[in-house]
Image (tube, rainbow, N blue to C red; front, side, top):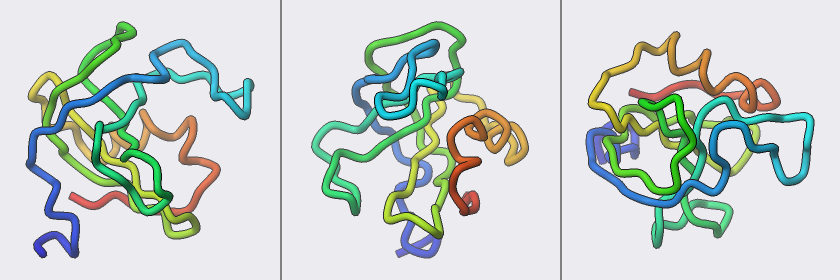
Length: 114
């Protein structure tokens, strides 16, 4: 596989937003989502749940998304990786992505794969 096993980068995916902008984390109400967060239907991650995604490219809460996977945040101290999806066609910089996902990823160790 290319990209060290992350050949999903560059592919188009679609799914559901279950934590829209402004919602709170179900287990930690101190975490508020500043970006849309959801999952890709029928694609399962290492935790046995559908693949989680951070959705970039809109500042309003949405219910569904379709966009390009532009990066993967690989957690080194957890079994889950998070896909970064751009719905506006923009290729965000590493710094922009890391800044936008920091609200939740600050609790984990990991790095961005492009």
